[in-house]
Length: 421
Image 1 (tube, rainbow, N blue to C red):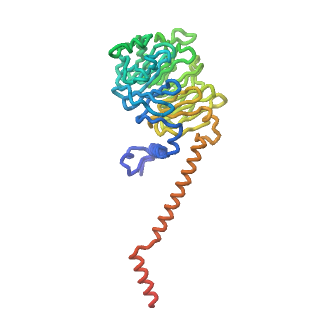
Image 2: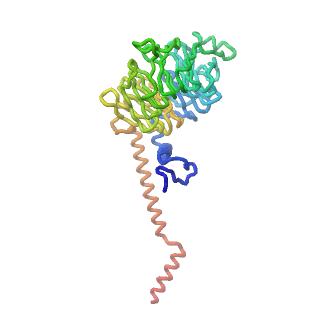
Image 3: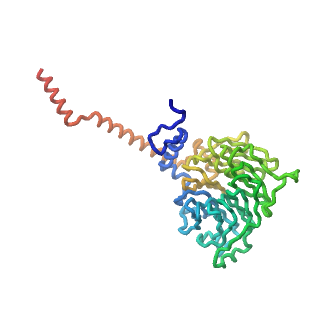
């Protein structure tokens, strides 16, 4: 008697995959072969898995890639620069400094990697490493930057958070003949018991840095000193959301004025009341939630999940509900960011995609988002496919009914014998 859910495929690759995993693989392969879906979101394709990205103005994006590189790309032409900041391992996180910090007119980017270091470089000249932040003893998993000050925050697999201060004038770094090595001014270790996967700053004052990771807890720090934030009304205890509501890895966090959003491997995204640290909203999914993005100006939250789907949730009226599904990515959603009237998504399928917020939210063509021009192309392709299948079936039927030369000769002899009778 077979085991329920066991795979009996003859494909050697699939011997140890469950039926559910095979279904997911089949869906992924179907999407990869769908020319219409591959046009969704006008994808930018850097030729490697995108692990992280950050926006640099309205026309440029900085990408952290699995190919051990960080690259800048033009959002209008969807082309990457030839030059890249090179690391000794996959680039897991990138960030761009405030536009007031420049070198020779170029914005400044940071890239963090499995090689345990963070590089600082001009977006216009990625191979020119201005500084190197060293101190972590394991993979650097996330990086964040202060919106107005030259302060950088890094989280690592070594369970520590490090605070770094760059020079007020980065032009001094450009004048050096070799990259300047910078040490952290503050290291926080011991509060988190697992790897640090994500960090974010409060968007109002940027005075609080939130951190989270594999221990399923969330903690808060003074963004300029690294001192733990005290619980309001109880100065003797640190602000903390303990493991419990989330039962396993938290992969992403984003803050709005009053709410902190987290995305977890326990198949949920949760909106927390920052003051009370209680759950305001729980968004249940059928698989791991890898990224979360609140867009409060239109009352929605976007979530990205392990199979590549994007979900848009209405959260500002009554019970939260999914109002839109986008099936464009064919692998894990790795990062979500918003800029004005658009939001961007990246995935391990090696694409960065752009979405107009109003077009997605106000779409009237159904639950699954598919712009009219692409729907027309999809219908045309479906019609052509059905026509080809019908023709193929007719041809197969004709071939099956046709006799070979030998069969025709035998039939003629049989008919001749019947005539002679």
